[in-house]
Image (cartoon, rainbow, N blue to C red; front, side, top):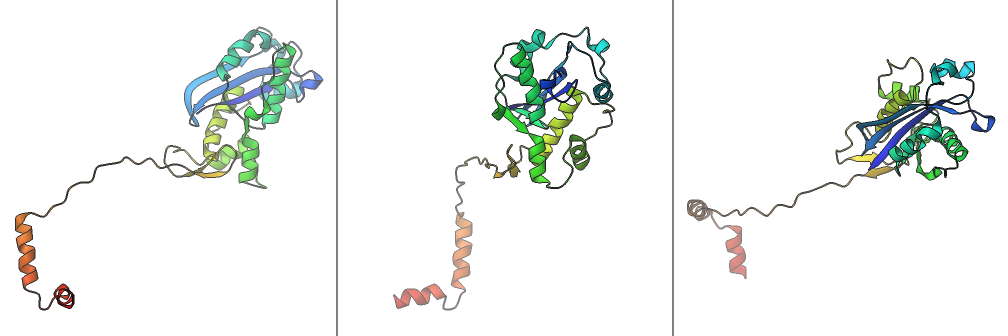
Amino acid sequence: MREIALDTETTGLDPEHGHRIVEIGCVELVNHVPTGRVYHQYLNPERDMPEEAAAVHGLTADRLAREPRFSDVADTFLAFVAEAPLVIHNAAFDMKFLNAELRRIGRPPIAGDRAVDTLAIARRKFPGAGASLDALCRRYGVDTSERTLHGALLDAQLLAEVYLELLGGRQPDLALAGEDASGETTAAAVRRTARPPRPHAASPDELAAHAAFLAKLTDPLWTTLDAAD
């Protein structure tokens, strides 16, 4: 099963207020495990960068001015994600921005039911506990030492590790109970290989030894039963 762990960085919190995506990071997963294929792109937002946003991801308008616009890379991005489910932490946020960018260039939106929201899974799994990506990394011992600032590709890579843990751990191929993307517990099917029965026949020496042993028994039960019949 192919999925895409995805994260974005933006100029702000709401595309309806003119905010734009400035970075997209994607990690390909097959059977919930990263394959090594990634998609990473900085984007020119064609607007200024608020200081509070730059403080989060470290990207400035000057730094992004030489990067392509979303319209320039839309085909490449859409080809990478294809029809795969999108694993996103707080999916409503990123999906809102992605669909705003697609709408701006006249492309159809990505269907909401393609998103697998790890924030929602974590809240169901650990009600009342911290469910941010940082909190989940701490819970599962995922190394965040390289994360001095938010970055879309790094966060997508961390998310891929967290997602695997949310589904039941780092050995997904073991045929044990796990959780599906909805957070429901499922029992994995056990694969068994059919083998032909092995013949087991006593040797002549074994048969002779058995007969000699029976001859030593006094009034064995089966003799009594045979007489009764």
